[in-house]
Length: 261
Image 1 (spheres, rainbow, N blue to C red):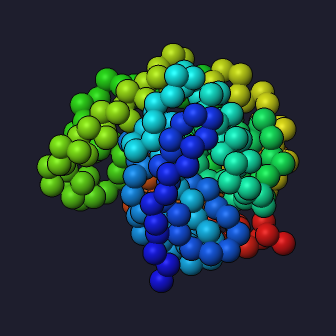
Image 2 (cartoon, rainbow, N blue to C red):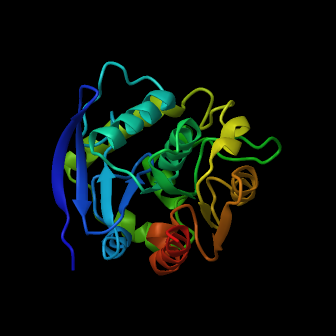
């Protein structure tokens, strides 16, 4: 079983924290607004077949907040520099929620170093007539409860009060997420028209009972990215990689096996 290690790299003047584990083709996982900083079971499983790299975004977690960090486009360009600095190519890029938005912004700019793109419950686009909640108005408890379809998982996540360091990390992440996604809320109005530029195999993974981004968004993403596959996971909310890790990893491993051919 592979063990992850913590590293720090300097990219574009930003001291960036990352976790790395496993061997094989590189897989970069971009976390969501309140995630990062950990090595959950799904990353451990993927690290059996891939060299998994899981950074904290600029402004989030253990990474610096550089002077140039103003919007999601800055973060996308940062990750293009990140790939170049680490010499990564033939890369499987995976992004969840906010990380999916960032991953899509990276891919419309350049797929030169990518082997595939996977979006998991990704924000970043807007569907008129499809109501979605304003996450910035939720209390921390509401935010946790709305992540899951299974209320028992929400109760489990809320059961242990976070330590002071974790509270600080969450506040830092919340501020950074607002900086990226405050206006317009949770999307880039210009992103969707450029999704046709993505020319690597694509997969869109979604929880069927997602209360943050309804499953209509999954169909729009898959319809706009040329040739993208769609995997809808039942009995699952916004975090299929956490709530249904076996189904999530099975979908990922099947897709990545085909993408590597």
